[in-house]
Image (cartoon, rainbow, N blue to C red; front, top):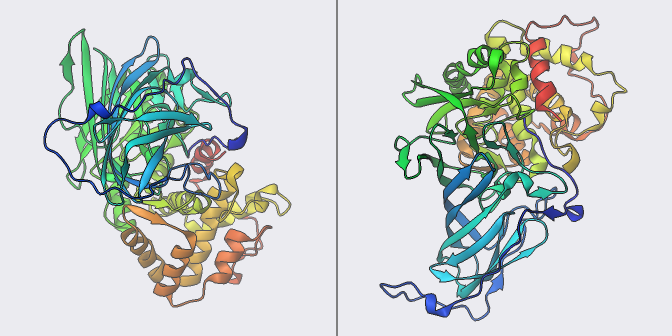
Length: 512
């Protein structure tokens, strides 16, 4: 459902249109107004430059926890130039002498709690900020970063997570996306809320996460400023921008929430198929809420991206973004089911590290099977049988482990298809009553947090009263084609479920 940049981090190089400017500390720049008494550590230490993720060890940063990002930007579609200021509200989790942010664009200045801070570049995407005064554990941090650049020309090993389109741009990618447009602690372990504000020429639309706290505001120079607000914590890769020419459709969902869908005007004859799919979002969310638990966010919707843009879809929080390829053969509600299932599995409950990606992709893929069952287009068992038969025993597909696929195979097809098969085998092992109690119990227990496969297994065992280690080990962590549960084995070639064609078409773009 996403596209990942998986080149070895140690081998990456960065090229930009400009150079990084280094600031200098200024003790005369103390904030005016009331004085504060701050405890000073005897020996503050640098925060770690990464969170130690086994796949992407330098993603994220240690020493602080972010509560909120206020991202205020100005964008020029004609030149792809982006400039702005991001204010980060955080709390020090250790005594800090310096800390890192994940970011690529050219930085003009950094202030920490009102004081000018020194900053330098290390590695590929590390912006290292030296606090002018030591920060103590538990101390609030207000970090203000001013910057500019051309994101599409800011490359990591020849790649940009910012997609320039014929009429604007998209900031949509996984597992890294924020690097190209706002400084952040870029790992799902550090969730935060967002305010995102973008000034663009009049006549250009800006779509992002959450709700619009106000209509777009007119600015000098024939410009409009669009604002979006996310009130529920999210991982940084789930924040997005879609800038360009869009037709925006608003409605109200059955649960009373605002639904905002946007369709690129470049879609041409694919637009009706896009609308026939994305306009079912509120219906899908209503259905999924009955299985996975209450919808975890404040708004719903979707974005149909321009014809010259993405080759994938992403579960950007509250409002998934879909590449134009999904509408090539007509409507496809299954990709809408997949991305909205991620609002529970991946967005609200995020991975504790990227090796647990099955908790995202396996669950979203199995949601498609449940939707097929509900629509009378093929049961989950029929889809299991046909998917299992579709991959011969000697296919390399069976050598990828959904429970630990490796950094280069995070979005391999096996994580999706074998991942869904694994969930079906768990369902068969525990029975429907326990299985459909496990799913909402999981989303409730880890709402707005993170989870691991081990934690999911423990919960499933607690609710079912069964030892599930054999099924988890066999289907998630053992190479080779597993043998299904005896009661479900079939000796004849299974018939193709009605939903298979659309599910397969969606997965051809989702999995990489």
